[in-house]
Image (cartoon, rainbow, N blue to C red):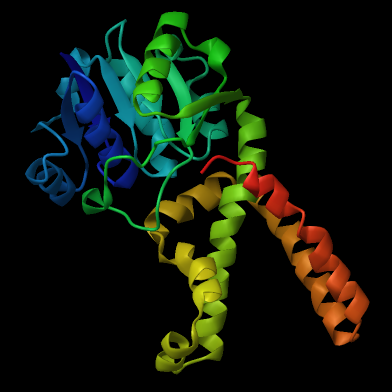
Length: 283
């Protein structure tokens, strides 16, 4: 039975622990700086025992599932303590900083930079559930810097989780994810903020909110503690995506002000083609 240490027992780390226990022969050891998270994860059966830093030397696999700003230092610390056969991977949605900071580490070959694109708007060990990763895309960055046997071991784990893995450079990943994920969360937070400011009577929001508003603003329920470091770690790409988004909003606003029926219609009609792209994505 392999020992798997999960550092960070929130939605992602907890859900990964649940399915590894379900589909593989793993003993799951949990570490979290929030003692309530470790005790709750143990109570819920997500982990088999609570670990300490000394546990890392005996680990076969270490999963780093902490907030984005903590991933580089935690990963470096983990690489300092592991044995030569240990697989270490993180699950963060920003890859550039961690890849750069561990690039010259003597145990860099033991590290796999992964990003399982999965999640919900909920957080904490109570939010973890089985099947979160089924049929989801998993991106591995800078695979050539990982030892072949270590990479294969990681791929076997992702296969057990029923993920579809693809490969990408870290800078490309961070650029693309800023548009398709980070910008979506910012849009949701700012839509929620705008509505709350314009409509101080919250009862009216609940009475009038249709499915469109609810689905668009759903991500605004996500954890600020999780998303603040993500936005700041990927600052350059997030700002580029925001600049283009704001430019499109200004253009659309101007066309409405001008009463340009044809141009307002054309902007939306041209954007409708995105449905063909989304329909081709396996859910």
